[in-house]
Length: 135
Image 1 (tube, rainbow, N blue to C red):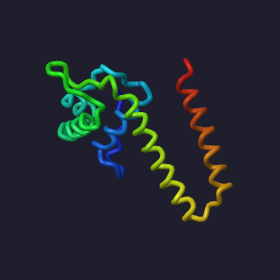
Image 2: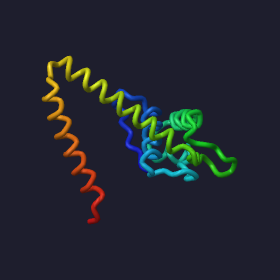
Image 3: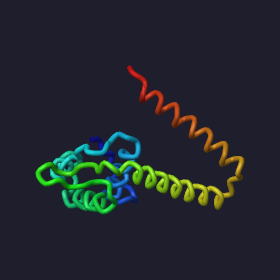
């Protein structure tokens, strides 16, 4: 599994891991019953403290996303997808709310916001299509 960690960003690393696992489950990249990397393996791969990984995994267990099976490691719960989709929608709504508040406080009009939104949506859609296209 591939994680993109921004160690210089404002979001703590364990929260980045939590978000990325939830988004991967919501998107179907991780499915119920699928094993996630061990704490040690992921810590080595990302070159971060194992306690950070363990903290993220503990929170994901508390959130009902992962479960620990003795001798098999951590697995995605079979019933995690719907909760992760709801968490994704909440994360996106919060980010949009913050962006709108900043834009409106900065004097942007509703028409300017719509124009920026439509242009960015089109750009992101094209990027996704190109990434999904076979070489």
